[in-house]
Structure formats: structure tokens, C-alpha cells
Length: 171
Image (cartoon, rainbow, N blue to C red; front, side, top):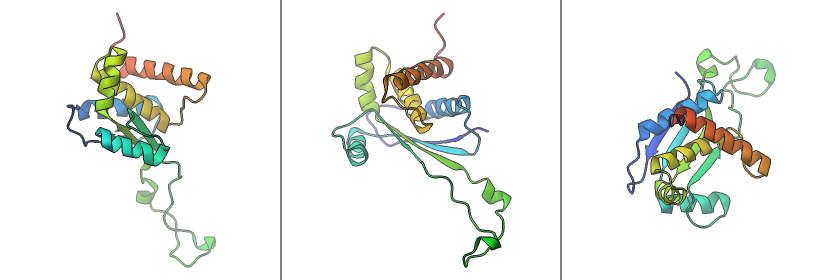
């Protein structure tokens, strides 16, 4: 089945093929070895929304193209064994509780900013948004680009994943 990817298009400036980007996200997560019991949200938002998120969570002004919000916490198990102490009901987790999906995080993309980037990078808007989706997912998986070596590794992985899942390699 693969990872669960929830997609929402919360903007109206540009048409977004949410099904295409959900499938891209699922394939990237699978290629990166993410198991079936993982959930990711992919949100397409307008400039005021991403600017507010950018300010609120990163302290930076103005809109940006993509933000990634990883869920850093381990899942909290339900229930407890009697020898763990406390006053609540005890007992092992049921198999249903064991299979609670892990929330990997959220990727937020602004198609309007992506459109400006696409013109600047001389690529299609679809190509630019695909790059932003992959970039955001790699951030959720722990990759970063703060240092030069890390940035080069991340950019190389982005190129590999895009060639494999977004567009056919050049002939």
C-alpha cells in the first residue's frame, strides 16, 4: 500500500494536479525506505498563508516556496503494563494500537512562488513544484542543506528522485 499522503489544495491562483503530486510523494517515500505505516500531509497554499507560516515558525519575513514541518516526537504508546506503576488501566497494546500510523510531517508548497521560481530557473511550473515536493519530503526525512556537503548530497538525491519519478531521464 505504501505511505499515506494527504493532499490539500488551499489556493486558487494556479491549478494543481493533486493526484500527481500525491503519487510523486508516495514513490519518493517508498524509494527512501519509508514503511507503510507513515502519514504525510502535502499542502498547496497561497502567498499570505505561506508568508504567515514562514514568519511564525522561522522568523523570516515574506513568502517562500516550500516549508517542511517534521514531527520529531516518537509515537506515544497507549496503555501500560501493570508493573509500570501509575493508576491507569494496564495491559499490553492491542495489535490495532500497535499499527497506529507514524506522522512524518507536513510539506507546504506555494504554487505562486513556485511559478516565479520556474520562470527564473527556466523550467515548467510542474517541474518546479515537483522539485519543491521532493525537497520538502527530504527535509522531513532528515536531510538538510546548511553545510555545502549536505547541500550537494541533498541536491543530488533530488535530481535522482525527480529523474526516476517525475520525468523520464534524458535520451
